[in-house]
Length: 509
Ligand SMILES: Cc1cc2nc3c(=O)[nH]c(=O)nc-3n(C[C@H](O)[C@H](O)[C@H](O)COP(=O)(O)OP(=O)(O)OC[C@H]3O[C@@H](n4cnc5c(N)ncnc54)[C@H](O)[C@@H]3O)c2cc1C
Image (cartoon, rainbow, N blue to C red; front, side, top):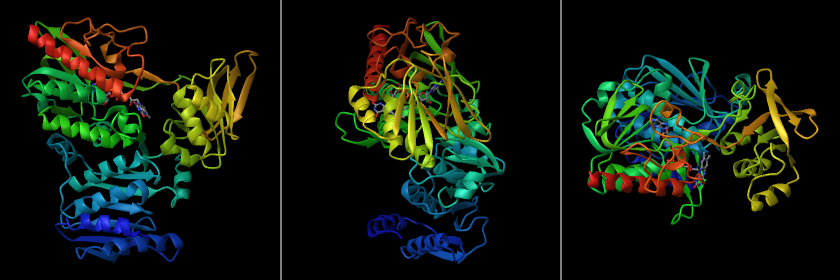
């Protein structure tokens, strides 16, 4: 089941096990059970600290990992291969006595939780799924009243269908749908209503530079500021930003290829090594000048003070505001082709948007699904010529321009899309199982609307050449600004500019 390379990699990790792990195996005689048994036997053969015993679990085939300390149930239903292999290896080490690396404030929030049974339906090709599986497993490790089962969608197709899962990861809590898509421990805790305690920020003192946001603009600003030897902090809902949603990145100079979460982890380590105080788990909801200082209020009631601030709150997917868009989210409406494309194998899908992201999505989907219809509002596609050439060469992609999508409809899940031909006015309907909406980004600036920070008509922050906003001491960087191109190196570059701008400002004062 495991090839030699995986076995030797895993064997090295298993040398780290501190205590015994019992794998409780729940299988029958069917083919899938045989595969899972073979996987578990292979793993057990790599360490004398792993024992296997029969166990009756809810799902067949599945297995439970049990360590020597009191923790919640950690179950894998189906095979944790592909992207989930790392989740399995980590869970094995954690039940084997290796404590997960978690910020103490987050640990406190996890320990305060009161009994939750989570299940996550994943696909092995989904790069967002391991974050969720690993986050929920860590929660089960740290709190014995939290249980988590990873369910591999292709082995449990009937269950996925029964629960109308059309996007992964799909998280269920106590049997009901809880949340879909990429999540971190912080976002799951937020959704469970567990806010980070305001007291956690009580003794932070006065920062020289406080950066709001956790993407590449914020991280680079922090690295530049901290290298000047000034007290630097980051406050972010979570660290990583949009880059965490990016599987393969090929346009960062010096890196032929990297993956979003790895890249942001390196930035985080670099910032931490420079003593940047990275505070996550709360959103900034106000910023104002108080005499010579800047005060930032958080949504948990805490307030932070700083001599200068850099706003780098980035952007998020734009909604188009049509009926069905939110109702069918995770039930046919999707954004991530790498994650959710495989779930539409053999089916018809639509892509709304003919810019670079829409056409890239259509090309990607064409290899996975039966047919793709691209709907573009304008008379022509806006994507780069090279992408247009590629998409037009594909047999199973149709492009409809001048198409105004008016609604997404279905019963339990998305079934069709309606659009109006903007030239003839004719209304049309196409049957689809999935719709990928790719109509650009919206800046995360709603929280600034009531502040003095000046925004453009598009809601983006207006900055000068040094990243300064109209408010003295407040700077901005990255996708949240008017910067024309929204890219990692551009965001990082403007983060550096804003940090140097803030440093110059401090020097002059
Ligand atoms: C799927 C996808 C693929 C991409 N691929 C590429 C690529 O291959 N190459 C490339 O160059 N670019 C790519 N991009 C674009 C690139 O990721 C962005 O340009 C870049 O991440 C912008 O960085 P940023 O720091 O400005 O903002 P973001 O990355 O958006 O980060 C903003 C951060 O601020 C936090 N935040 C938001 N509001 C608040 C608040 N009120 N308080 C506290 N924190 C807050 C968010 O949680 C987030 O951590 C891609 C984007 C996406 C979505």
